[in-house]
Length: 241
Image (cartoon, rainbow, N blue to C red; front, side, top):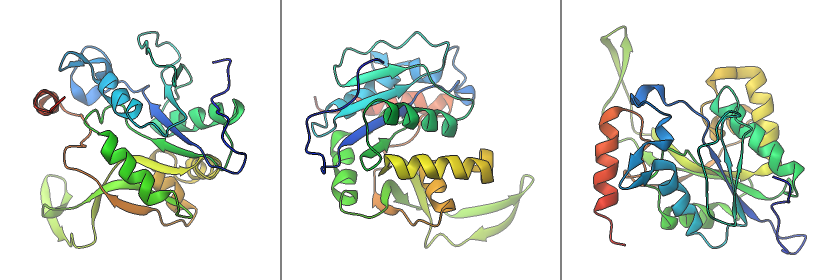
C-alpha cells in the first residue's frame, strides 16, 4: 500500500480501523487450500467476514494481512487494503499489521478492531455493539460469551477435574484496543509468552490491563474443523438479506 489509511477527521478524534489477520494455513480444517479461501454459501469465507465490516459505516479503513506469498485475495472495496506482511503466527501477523498502519498515517490513539478471518458469521450489529461499549473505555475490550457447558480439565484422555464455570467466558473477536497500546502489548507479550499469545486480550493482560467483556453471539464461532463449514453455510443461507 502506498497511500495512507486516513480521513479528514479532527486531530483529536480517535478513528476506527479493522485489522483482519488472514495468513494462516488452517491445518485443522482439512481443506486443500487455506481455510479462509474455502467457498461457503457462494464465496470464499473471508469475503463474508469482510462484508460484515464493510457494513459498519464508521470504520475509516480495513487492513487485511495475508502471507507474503499470497496473491489470492482481491477485494473490491475502497476502504479495504490487502498487505502481504503476515508472520509465522497470528500474533506476529497482527503486530506486523499494526506496524503497517502506524507507518501509513494511523495514529497511536486510534482504535483497531482485530478480527479472525475465519469468524465469517460476525454481523455489523455485533461489531457496532463492541464499538459502542468500548469507545469510552480506557482499555478496550472484546466480544465473548459466558461459558454454558461443564468445563473439564484433563490428564491425557482422562478427566482430572471439573472447573468452576461461573466466571469463565469464551473469547471471540473482534477485539478492540488502541493501535499504539496494542502494538506495545503484543511486542512485549511475545517476548515474554511467545506462542502463548493467542489473542489481543491476552497480550494486553500481560501488561496488567483488564479488557472489557462484551457479550457476543454463539453464531460468531471460528470455523476450525471440517464439520464447522456445513454449520456456517447453513447459518449464512438462512439469514434474511
